[in-house]
Image (tube, rainbow, N blue to C red; front, side):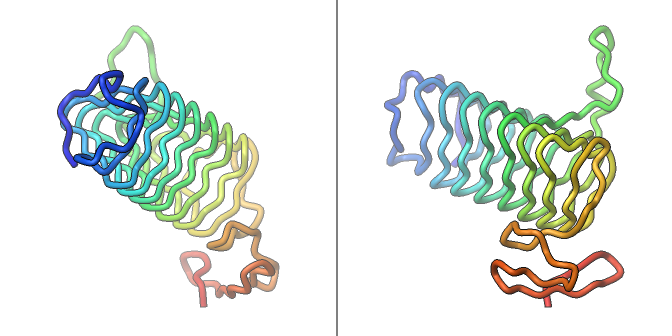
Length: 203
């Protein structure tokens, strides 16, 4: 549903039947924001203008989204995350507590550089661990797993498991989130994978 500007202290802290989504009374929703049904936006968060949030998302405490950001369905954004202009999250993205996005590669406080925003794309099913940093201008592949505290400054393949500063690949992650074995099988959910030119795919 598309919204006009809302100061949500005027709302009861519950799902409103005319919207289908929940916004806590302490949060702000700016004009021209679209929020899907089943989405929950918790304490002290701010959704800036012209942003879109899909269905059944969970937006934690002290989260800032936008402006002009697109977030897919069933995303979970934990506390203290800012999703800046230029960042796109596809469906099923997990953003761990206090992880960081950027959008200007070489910012200066005294120089306006919003015309230099570098787009960042996080593809379907990816996990971004707590306190990791995603340097703007990268694409992170489907079902990749970014370890806690990692600093990602280059593209990440599908299913890649990366850790460290700068982030380096140490293996592959299954759809279920567990590390894939050297034989390209998952001991947890029993999925099996095969190698392709672009990484691995499920058999």
